[in-house]
Image (cartoon, rainbow, N blue to C red; front, side, top):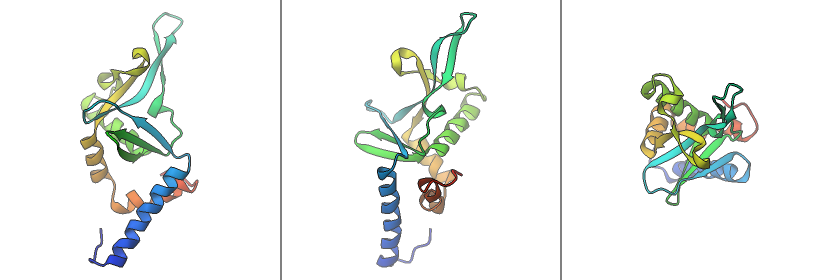
Length: 155
């Protein structure tokens, strides 16, 4: 990121970030997830059990991250929000499936809410931050999300 220790320049960069956050909070772009547990992990729901197939086997359908229409996820823990582009969170989950689950979501998914009917992937705060740091540039993080907020194409 370019810097020149100039207050006016830094102020302009800060205003861009403020405007982005304002747009996120104004529109219907966010899906907010709250995690009450005192740890560094988030449970990201991806599918759930929905009855049985005709042969009696469990029927699973995509849910949560797999069906959301939100452009961004806001993950809250201990009064701290982490906002991540939904497409980036999906890429992070896919990366975990490929590297930790040998390409099988069922290998790393764990049961969660809804009486144990929901299944998801645990993602740590550090994994989210590391993923963003390694896969998004400053320009992509601040400027390239503008089309999504303005109704343009998402990636």
